[in-house]
Image 1 (cartoon, helix red, strand yellow):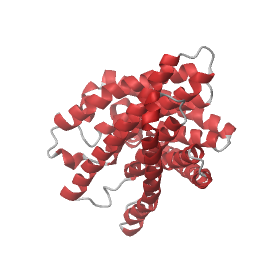
Image 2: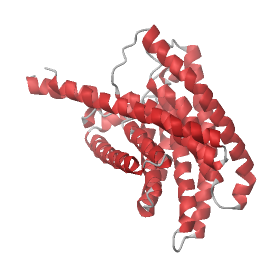
Image 3: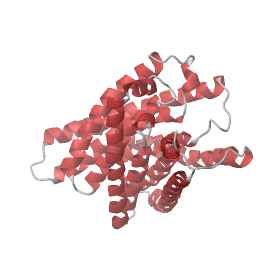
Image 4: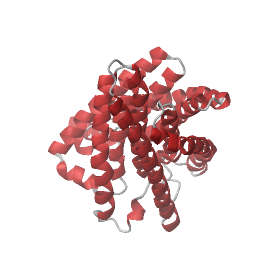
Length: 359
């Protein structure tokens, strides 16, 4: 193997830029960049929001092309990932990434592309939401399956809630457009409530699976990686979905669920807030106490998304429930989220440069 081939192999192995080595969770960077963009808009930073949004769109197109090529050229590798319980749930980042962009388009007032991505995200959810549990659990050769459970399982719940967020966001905006279809608005409201409930149920299922993994198998500092931040991020996106459901117009369905959704959102925000110090402490235990190296890895984007989502959730909940203190927390937390995003993004670029220069 010549030097050029070795460099290319190293690049592929470290970055997953080759379709043959592309990670199922590659759309996590889209999710993270998209949610930080939405947070910027809520914080009144329109130019930053637009810049980050189109960066997220670029990442989305890039990883979509690589994913399609991988499915066509390396079907065996895709099939292996689908049957691997430690990797398969990463495919749900495609659902969440699609819906984060759809929500961004709603914020920009671009309803047609938002509706298009909503349909795509919904179809992806239907295919993966039913397919992956069968392939990764029932069709896996890993025994026991609980040995392969990790933080990426929680993206299953995040994907469901991302559908609810887009449905609610469109349901809020469509009545203000000319010739709004009332039937479509009612369908969106129903979809938002159903997916909110499904996402909450899936969160509980995933927590039980993770608890079994921790109790039944060795769980060391090397196992406590960045995706476990999704334990907080999944709650945060559930709060966003609930807050936007509360902002929907009056319908019989919402009248019967409004109290439940509103009370649940407030309680979930309290739990998510309680989890933040615990996750920070876990990071200190992993990196400072047990000296696990803190280097760039694509999985770090799974930490950026929850941090950004907590800011958006706090702002949305504070404004929806008219609690200025919660909104204040969200607006100030956003600067932490932006800093974390910038740190990971710069680390990614520097790691990429070092990889290219490595002999």
